Image (cartoon, rainbow, N blue to C red; front, side, top):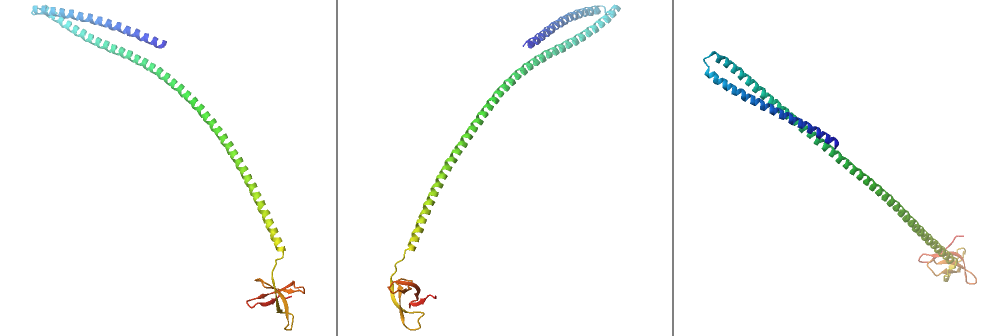
Amino acid sequence: MDLFNNDFKAINEKFNAFVCSHNLVLEENTKLKNKILELENQCNTISEEYNNYSKVSVVKNLHNQIFEKDNLIKHLKSKLSKKNSDEEVEVDEEEEEVESEEDEEEEAEEEVESEEEVEAEEGVEAEEEVEAEAEEEAEEEEEAEAEVEAEEEVEAEEEVEAEAEAEVEAEEAEEEAEEVEVEVEEVEEEAVEEEEEVEVDFIEKKLKSPNSKSRKLTLYLITDDENRDIYERLDDGEPGEHLGKLLGKNNKPFFFVK
């Protein structure tokens, strides 16, 4: 602001000096105009004298003087007009300089204001960047915490699944053990059943013995089932050795080859 005030004072001083010089020019101009009026009056006087003494040689001299005065007046008028134009040009130039200086001052003020606005905007942007970075860090921390929680949940679920699988495997092992026990029991029962003798009814029937050359028939025991096996009849009436079986619809005896 001090620099601006100094510039303003300098411009004021220049403007005051310009006004003073302009006033001096105007005064000089007024003086010249008065002188011109005096010269014109003199010229009019001389013209009158010329008219009175037109036939005298003195008139010629006066005429020459008037002519010279006229020339002098024209010269002074041209000089005055030129001076006025120069003064107007100078005034215009000084006014333009003043205006340009004022424009420069306005531009300087606008630049200062724009710089202040830019600095303010940069400060706001910096604050926004800091806030954005803080928000990003907070979001990253939240994401990291969420990932940790998700991993813990996954691990807990995996542990639960592993425990469930272990329980299922244990149950399956128990079921398999029970099935094996059942199978063992069934096998044992089957073995016991196989060991037990199956009670079959026998029918006594006389058949021709395969080793006998005579037509004498021998008494054998025949099972009363679909197999129709032939057993040797012992003296006590119990079945002995399995000898063969009856075949076909005609119950033809077939004896095993020994």
